[in-house]
Length: 335
Ligand SMILES: NC(=O)c1ccc[n+]([C@@H]2O[C@H](COP(=O)([O-])OP(=O)(O)OC[C@H]3O[C@@H](n4cnc5c(N)ncnc54)[C@H](OP(=O)(O)O)[C@@H]3O)[C@@H](O)[C@H]2O)c1
Image (cartoon, rainbow, N blue to C red; front, top):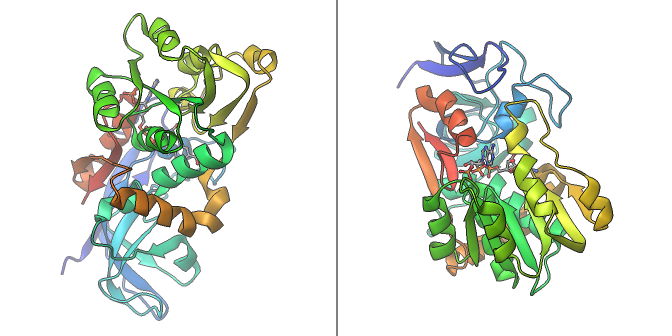
């Protein structure tokens, strides 16, 4: 039985990408647990763009991570010792594990950890992807905010990422013409050939805006926005009257502390409805959505994919990979 817990602490706030001084890896003894607590060993860490937001000190939807705190992260862990009535050895849980090898679940935290069901057609990593934050974000963002109608045109940015790849497939399930925007030809091929998007556009090609126009001959009814900046601007320029902009994320601005907002003129001209949302607002409906996503996965209507990086020590560089577009599907660190 190992005795030390390796943990990444926030040492300095980043100004751009994460440099070696931002997070500090330390070792401390694995804590012993008391009555009402359980000890879990982290198996997988979910690497999310919002981690870069949590490192910055500005008002946000959760308190920023403080200097000297273990870096916040979602993860999947297995209970190895329990004095907690709700958890037994061998149970798998997901929740805010932090960027570390072992986490103590206390009574107060029990609501932030979900015990995972065992389903033969689902792997552990599915619970951080399709059945985790990204699948749920895609589901509620598209279905409850975007409200797709059959025959409408949906454009999704960061389309080969964890959230975007599921958004596009849900759009197809709901009868939309789906156009994805992504940063490499390999990503475009995957979303078109394997996931069934109607068109895929590599925004690094010089003529990508004319490709977007050609791929959206009837304009755009729903923009599922993951990126912001120039990409959002180009999609706004193609919006139809009374279109909907689902503001899910603005990743192009996260390392610059710039929201990356495109010109708002089109919002007035086209009478668009622009709605930001956060997945935590839908927590009471997670169970129902999870069943539907699981069913679509089981029947082959939804596919998910992971990019796995091995080793806790690689976690800071893994976060940077998101901002360099080096992941396809969900980025996960395996411990
Ligand atoms: N509202 C919510 O509750 C919620 C929940 C989860 C996630 N989100 C947001 O959803 C978005 C996607 O998150 P995710 O976890 O699914 O990540 P992801 O899409 O798996 O990974 C991020 C992708 O964004 C693209 N990207 C990064 N910087 C870019 C830039 N400057 N310009 C264009 N594309 C860029 C990269 O792909 P390319 O190769 O295509 O550039 C990268 O692979 C993020 O904005 C995130 O903050 C929101």
